[in-house]
Length: 411
Image 1 (tube, rainbow, N blue to C red):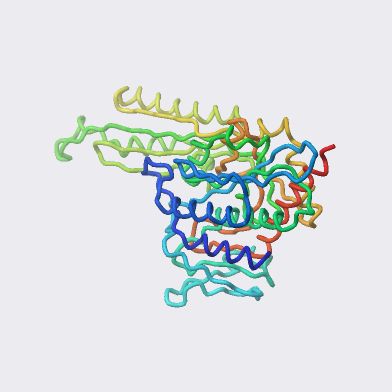
Image 2 (cartoon, rainbow, N blue to C red):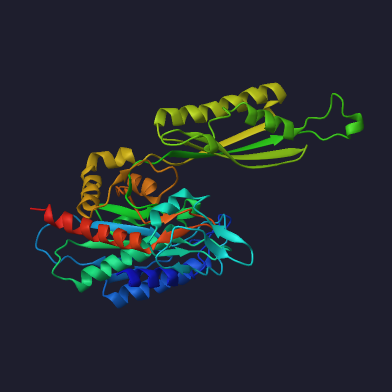
């Protein structure tokens, strides 16, 4: 299984599927189409049934039931795109057998080193087979590792028909990294009662709580006058924008928060005297605090509008997704089964909130409760990304074990 996972993952990683937030197509980039078509052929080759790809690049397939029990239909999902923050072109994965615990030279020419001095968690991987970047791109373990693990688990079950299971659906989706993953996902067509995204980080992660999320866009209009004659006339939009930012709690930002703490995150600040634009994301696990954060931004905007003129401040806030715990808690047994599956395999479950986005947040509100499982990667979205092939095996085994437990627990 390990070699199969390595070969699948490296094959997928070499396809540039970086998503593009400025594109209006679905998928947002042609590379995602390339990978989607590759996955369709692989699903057919291993013997999956009902293999489809729709006009928006969503790939779905079925592992038929081999039991007479009325087992709930469950699904497993992973996304095909990689993050737009760092290049996914010309990915050249490197394989390190029996990692010795020391520095890993990613790129000798450029002096790029993956060191346990900078990333102490590397110590946990001594003796593992690691897959790294060559220092010039991201790796794409988020979430091509998840794809490889789902595909390998399905192939394992097909090759071992003695393992009884209900009907299983799988899906590979586009554009998760730009928040659009579920936007055109056909829940009814998928036909699962519950699902799991295989999109988490290190070994044992099990997540069923996510942020409540919104984005805020602020446009501030100024008045530009020659600085030599500007007294009493000039209105500098940059300074008003700085005033807006300074009225937000300084320590309620990503660089100062962890666990269940929410934040305001200034993503971009672009301006001149005449016009300045601010782009924020707002995150909080607690719905009341989430609403309070949005109200705080409206309060600041209203105060500045009163001070400088109502026509000078425009604030637009749009909700993006909500905490999926609200939809998963009534069917908490799906989390318990995943927890039991890990425990059965000697893996310590690490139940924690997701401090980021996941397709499961939106899918849960679309009628498909979807917690998140570990895929095994570290340092996502950058040149220092890596993954343990040994832990990829464990992720595939967890998928198989969950499927077995659903069958065993059905009378």
